Length: 450
Image (cartoon, rainbow, N blue to C red; front, top):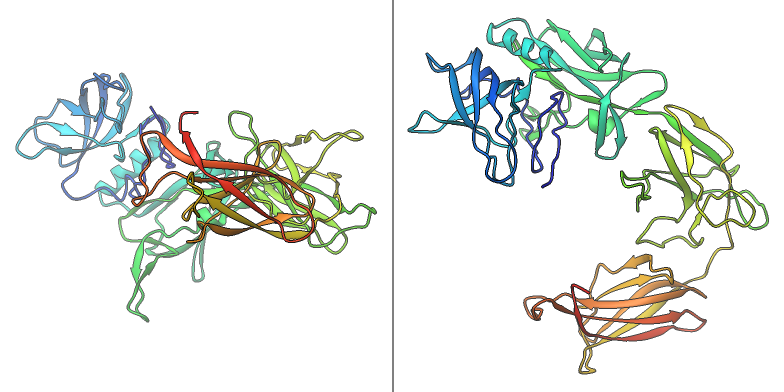
């Protein structure tokens, strides 16, 4: 069973599938949705065979039927996509009443949230129900990966600006901020803290859609609109500004300009990621600086990503020790700068085009095959985005004097459906030498389970 977590302020709610709900508890108020604060008497459980949660209603917020005290809520437990309500926990529950019955249900992407740790959201909802002044609140999260944000950042200056109007809030120890009584307007929101850099991609994501009065077109709303009596939840994010710097030199110790240097993070299993978290280019003096690095270990290299080999310099990583080939892990603490991570590159390679001819089991030219290149260590260095042509040919980028395993395969198509678990595959070992290199790969049946 897979679990994911909605990246809101809300804590303690497990999901069994991915959720892409753009609504927040504030924006979901209104309409026919029943909203109340409830304490769970009977846990809904998770997985197959679990039943509904039994909940006692403690506080009505919206559309709660008269006389409602205890209610069973179907959380979709037993399906592949559910929302668990845990025993003895208190939740603000957003639930729909099933038409023609007195039963209630919530889906996995419900805006239901655990009150513990989110009391400020509940207070904002109460204020909204009473028609109080506008509130804008959220959490400044710590960015740790392209799509990963964990925990809150304390002591961040959150600035809301509209024309000449400017107001500032400071995040608490959990990274939470709140503006009360902002005049209705469209606001630009920025975040500032020493040792951190705003995660602009996340912070400037569209907050909705608006009609452009000039073009009469529907466009993403870049600013955040605060209206009278509204409640807005807007999470923001910052990158810890860890840095790694050094120089890039060639075989003659000459400083190299314009070299792309990469920083690779590690996943939760301790494995190096296949794509870099950060990349930068060395300057005219051969120096580079990789910034916006969260706390953690990194491998620093040139052309060191998996599945691609598009740089004349061979894959190279930073190592320690004379003659070592083992990648060194460079440790960066929170907002720390690590200097002296110098790279020495081997000579550039000569790029060439390899002509690959694919034939089927019967020896006839085979169209619609895909090609991959592996090195002798079994690491994929290139894959084709186009299939072989009608004559079974395609061209592949390679480098002189490199060794490759050239693989061709076809998992089947409408015109060539696979037989059971079988597909067609073939491979050839190749050492690229001068001239016009070409190779023929013969396809044969393979089993997907092998």
